[in-house]
Length: 374
Image 1 (cartoon, rainbow, N blue to C red):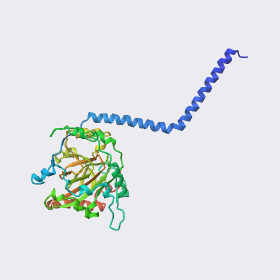
Image 2 (image 1 turned 30 degrees about the horizontal axis):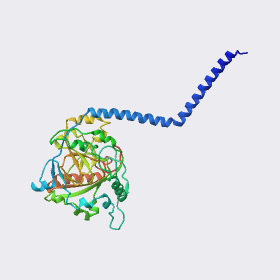
Image 3 (image 1 turned 90 degrees about the vertical axis):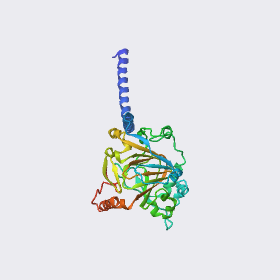
Image 4 (image 1 turned 30 degrees about the vertical axis):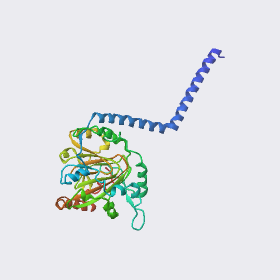
């Protein structure tokens, strides 16, 4: 027979084992019930730690230095005799000021466009970035609902504190002063957003052509073609250079341009990925946090920066590397042009490559126009 003391001692041990067993069962229950959640939290925490470390690396690597692009008001352009041939970019403030596009190219009015048979136009949208990385399948979507959604988003004013170069900082710069960009801004972007890019809208709706008085900016004969870009804030067009010269007309919204002249070609890392009329770069400005070595290698390059607001037009000379970042829902029209000489020297080779590409004989399966891996 056990003494009361030994009985209490044994009972205590049994209670301890019983509690330990219950705790083990409880832990197993939690693991089964919340295991996946805990794993997701752990992965998310690791991603945050990595992102913080990468962003810290980015802050320690300033990257290329920039100066603001040459700028002139549209009224001043007329006073100096108009636009002539030039090898460097030029930002014309208020270029669209007296053009019908300034009033007619709103999100709401563009959403009212209809085909000749009265049907609502549809287009294939770009799914995320295509200039670098993997090209996604392009969804066919109606345009009107997309534009009305952008119209609602456009009611939110653009913050002076966001961007590669926040406007409040830009205003403090002196002419010719060098600065560095805030590449961490690109980490706020959501991948794979639908973007209506390179739509030949003036071919589908030729009545809109009279809304742009491009000849007032670009005198002389040349073969021109146009592409429209419509999309939300926090989207971007990857680093590339075009074969033709380009007048980029901003009807709505605000965009930032990062540009490198042909003299910086050695730093641009051309890609083998095919794009009609353009050469792409392997450098993805949205992933410097993952590839800080790319930012470090760009450190010796000298670039140009432009903030293009509604009503402005930016001249981008051929062979100028550039990437575009949207700060607000935007409508933009890019007008490309080739003179007779440029058609022979640049247009014919470009058309030949495109013919071979569509015959599956030139860089097929590695292009921006068809879905494929990186």
